[in-house]
Length: 79
Image (cartoon, rainbow, N blue to C red; front, top):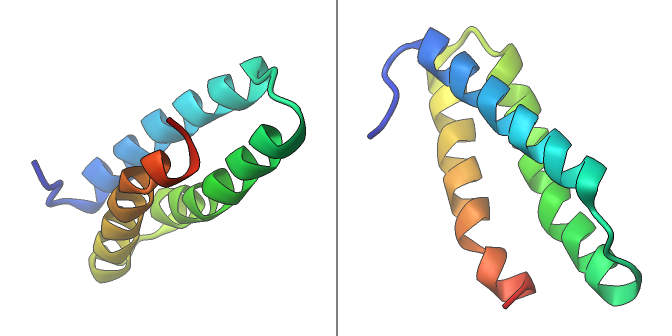
């Protein structure tokens, strides 16, 4: 379901950030896997930050779709 209000986007970003923070804190990966995680996470973290701060629904919607797109690429980095 697509959020329709900026507040929904902000709440989604807060939830995503919480989950990402937990994943980063608990990460025990090393070497190439760790580097792959960073390559996958960096664009995601950037889009979550934009989503969390925006008051513009058009910008929020773009970030929302960018986040969805990045989440779908997970399998390209990991099994």
